[in-house]
Amino acid sequence: MKKRFELTSGLQGETLVRKGMNMKRPVAGQLRIAPDINVVKIGGHGAIDYGREVMYPLCEEIGTLSKKHQVLVVTGGGGRVRHIMDIGIDLGMPTGVLAELSSKISEQNAIMVSILLSKYGGSRIKTGDLLELPMLLKLGILPVTHGTPPYGLYEHPARTGLIPPHRTDTGAFLIAEVLGAKSCIIGKNVDGLYTEDPRKNPDADLIRDITVKELLALDLDDMVIEPMVLGLLKDAVHIREVRIINCHTRGNIEKAINGKNAGTIIRAE
Image (cartoon, rainbow, N blue to C red; front, side, top):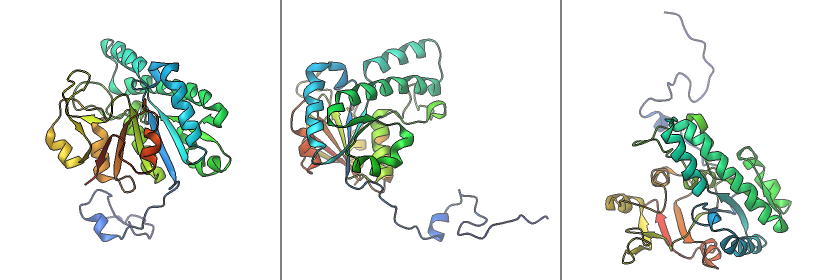
């Protein structure tokens, strides 16, 4: 049997899928690239689609906060994503193509939000620019990026249906995790996570604080946050909680940045 040429390393000869592989090699602590940054996701459906009535005061609030705190704004897609997905599904587009199409919408929103924040140093950055954040922040730039993860055509198949499972809540979480951010704040148009959609059932209960395990056990029919975030939160290294707030209410973002519960906190454990 011929011998394979190997390079001496801690993973020499490994298949990278063997059970127990990670127990063989000690893992160094992961570096936090931007430990003081607060990732604030502004939903398209939850905020941007409301237009100037919501976005003007919201951008003023974020811009003012950015003078005291490091902030990265992440945008969602909103109604236009739902429209293009509906057309795409009707035409039989694969999940990966739907992901490609929807990413263009959240990018458009990032451009608009960055312009609204321009007087505060708002600047639209692309996903490839995330490693430049430490320098950009020192230059006084308020970075804005879109939230759709860049899986594109390589998007994971959905468990049911065709809608891409990695959307903009998930993208904001993944950005926060890779940066080792201080916090991950998800802005919505409701006061947090409810047992049911509060717009359909006004008697639904607001869940103020809950773990991923407890939330999964509830098996809710509908949630204000993407289910994929829960699976990722369980295994995350840096981001061990996600805060859901109503970004229409002035002051909620600052409360969340300062560690206060301004809506719902979902904890890894």
